[in-house]
Length: 406
Image 1 (cartoon, rainbow, N blue to C red):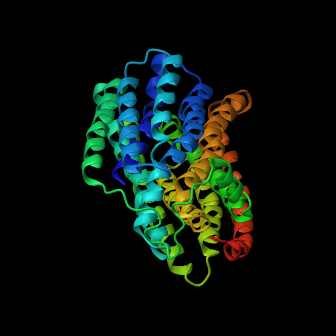
Image 2 (image 1 turned 90 degrees about the horizontal axis):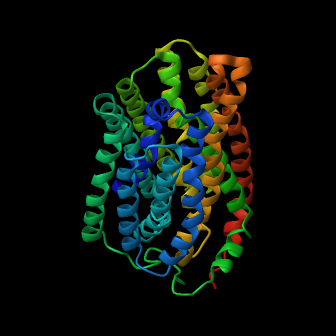
């Protein structure tokens, strides 16, 4: 969870600092969308699969420690960037490093915990997202206010290198399949065999798309929320950092743990709840977030965005848990990497860029309100996400019954 927190401290730090960077380097909203989304996501998801393939055959802890050192070091170097191209290069470097985090971590956790406890365990790991956002927004906003955005990158990047050393010295690499009743973890499968196995399961295809479009909304709204608060509510960098830390950090943490816990609880009766709880929560977040975006009252924005964040965060741990139920133990890192490939290409790659692009396009007609309308339109992608989660739930029973380890 600590490693995953640094994954998001370093990833989201640019989000809280983007208005200061935009002003100094004279960037457009489309360029900001590229930096916070696509430039990072392309390398993050592309390298995630081969690194995960390596992890399914070798020591996963060591891979995570090496990658944590890389992305934290590049984060510190980001403070030296003087133009858009240099920022793109540093985002690529962070993306390359962070590609070696979650699939390997998911696989280790699934070897620590049996199937009936995995969603809760994975939700605790996933709390690292919101712990990282809390620290990144709070620390980044305050440091930027008093020392500037360049110092913020250095101050947040260097501690990750120290954590990599702690990880290497304290985390035990478990045996693959240690918590599975049936173990075939030592069978050597090609990457193509793993991919073919996964995409023979309709539930995996649907849940990957559901997670992707949920992330599209989540990243599209979340990555532009600091700019939204700056432009429409006149908040300072420090105020935005504190507000986002409390709203997104705490709200997202509650939603993440709640989603995993509820799915493990109701999933005892039917595994479909692992997919339908994210569906219900995601659709429920849409009207709350719409009100938050279009109200002119700052307190109402906070009052409605907080429960919206809780609901929108309930999808990830259950999605990973179901994915791991569908595969053998020696396929889990690759499975997570493919899930994250789809999720991040659609969500992280598309969401922030779509909002930034729409904001620029709508300026001629909506003027200063263009960002508000761009964010509002993006929310309705959540209906597509809900549809895919519903279809995944319908297909899940057959896919679990057909699962054959022989």
